[in-house]
Length: 135
Image 1 (spheres, one colour):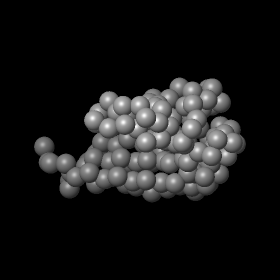
Image 2 (cartoon, helix red, strand yellow):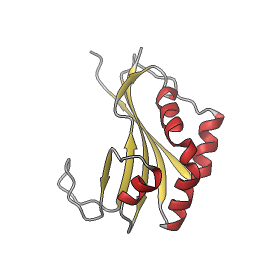
Image 3 (cartoon, one colour):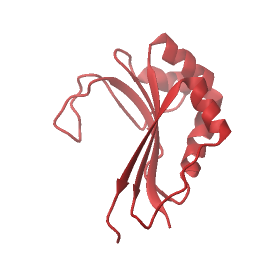
Image 4 (cartoon, rainbow, N blue to C red):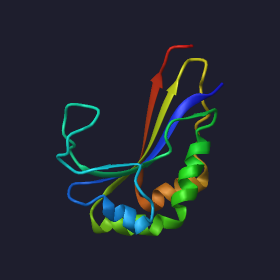
């Protein structure tokens, strides 16, 4: 069985222009915002500046498919990510969002190359799992 999953590389800080990340990495953000900007989804204001790249929700049986996609896109840019994060005092997170039913449990594991990449860029891992109704 498959589930819906989204893997996001998120770079956050208190006072930086997210466009700098796009320029440094030669990759356009799938979403970005500035601190104080009104949220599109909620009636709140953003609490930090952010650049993020998301795979978008995909139906998968193995989350590693999406982790590998992010790895292949950013691994050669890991030194630029690390240097830029240090220069602007940024935090990095790999966010994994999984929407599943009790019949759609995905495989979730981290290959050594993924762990090494995340360690090199100083990223934390955030996993959110949501149980949906069976359909």
